Length: 544
Image 1 (spheres, rainbow, N blue to C red):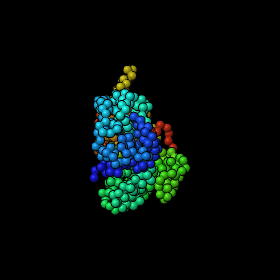
Image 2 (image 1 turned 120 degrees about the vertical axis):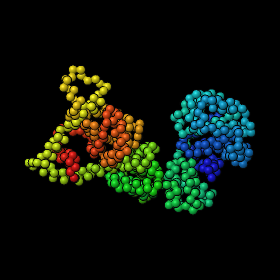
Image 3 (image 1 turned 180 degrees about the horizontal axis):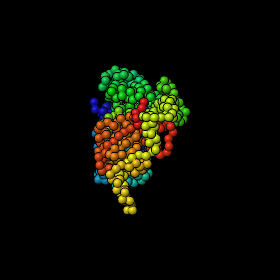
Image 4 (image 1 turned 45 degrees about the vertical axis):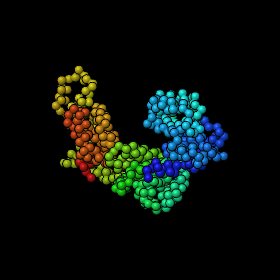
């Protein structure tokens, strides 16, 4: 069965069957009962919540030949049957997303003038009305100002702010709200009973959560689950929908919050190997982080969840500050955006894990290594000779802040600004040799140009490079510093490095190689402490 056919089969036939929208159905029933309907209605709210269903109910109630005492349509007369079956030519549904132009509206207005063929009133349901053009709205406005007695307009939209105030002021507005999990489950149980399906409560709960407050999405997911047979368990439902278990998502976040990046990456990788939808996995992680944030901010855990999960959320909320949770949320929200564009769906989540858990893990490892560094420091303070003396000199050189940048790079970076005409002829020697330069400002513009070009070519690589800092430019080699090992390794992969070197070479005007290393990206311009010198020596000579 096609979804829309399945959805229409279980669409509400009376206002009383609409679940959880009493703030809309109550006033509409009262107006129909009193015979005080208007010429224009505006139905607003999230997608898939029942706006067009209510529009059809209202069309039936206005035209019903045997209207009930409570204002409900009878669903038995010719008018109700024709509208239910979509046969009535006096009820017209228009998708404004595909009929945005003024010509479409003018054609509608021409037809509005004609009297109805069989019903009491002609009803025009315009869905996604905010998509109409400005000129189309202006044409519609004239009809709304002086509508024919036999015409009723029902406008539906998810984005009220895009509708002109002149239109809003001429329509009676009704706001829909998202359905609660309980309301969605109530509706699904009715469908399950009609379809004679055995399904456990955990499956209903899972579908309701995935629907995120939308009845149409819930019905769509339920129809998908029905492909698994007439007897469904939570395991089968989860497998059909491609959703990970709550426990897997919570274990993942426990690892992230506990700065166990390796464990979190392993869990995410296992989820990916199972074939689950990583966008959905990321959405579930964001929902849990939001739950933690709300608990931290308000002190209340009001989410609809199991007692066990609520206890775990309370425990996790106590391990981080509100600011730390906000940063994690930002990382996973950014991952959700990247997931729409990347070919490798695990990568954005890995990046979010590294940003959320990697930095603190690095700090912890640094703390554990502190005692070892102190031992090296003591040895370095002793009189030195031979190779050890060479190492100390290298440390002093590192701490001096001098970074070598070739003349070719300097000239490339300053092409748009002519040099000083009074410069000494000795400056010509710069064309033949590299010179030490104690600042990095002159390669800042070059790096920004590289980033701008990379953004056009490869969005994923651009996202990785945003956290990189240029450390130096010597000869034909550009050295980049990365805070995280994960970012460094991804950029260093042959395909990514080749693209980066190609763009860098085009920007600087000659062949350019790229070297990546772990660094905070801050060139040192002042004398460093002995411990920092030893750390620099370790990096240069790869001492472990």
